[in-house]
Image (cartoon, rainbow, N blue to C red; front, side):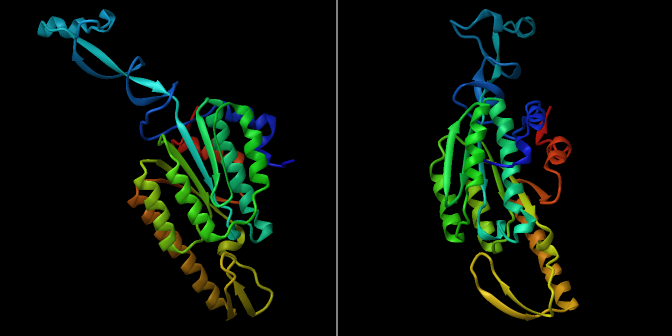
Length: 295
């Protein structure tokens, strides 16, 4: 059983009114609601070409013929389905501290985005790198399989997560929208490597960084502390002080600035969601206002 807030029937009905917007056009496998690279029958005009024997006379532009005395037919962008991939980071930092519930919030974000795509009968894939890959599948009923998979996801070692992303990219047949949800608490070199891989595979990437209250404001009950890297278990003894806290916050903000520079470099969309924030407001207001979703 799962206790994801986003799976309430009332909120699912709200999600069914939304549609995921891609900034790019991709080839699909069947008719759908997104303008594709293929030209054929559609509603969005693309170009003209010379009339050829066998073309449908209804597509002849008689206005152009009147001006040029030549027959041209209109071409339209054919509407096809969209492939939507979702990567959810399940490394240790996403599960710690438990009170922040970062992985749960990331799971709800993933389920919301995928349910919107499923409601539009897009093809969806869910990957928890280093653990599981589901899809492709279509239709809203698939959301329950996705929810169960996320609810049962264990902590994944960083090296397995990195290998899982590479494996995911090797299996892509049709590029599309890729949603990557993480706290991005990895070393910047690894984050850059992952984003560069996604960029080179012709994906329209949307990054969501889920943050917890203790990420930027760690609370300590003593001036002496042992810091443990949740990803590597490496320990560091520190004398904790107000100046050390200021230094920590400075480095945290610096890390965020470097991520934003990488996002700009690789032409990706990027959003930050605090784990304490209502995911419902995020879907109903922030993402539509940013142009990621449309009604």
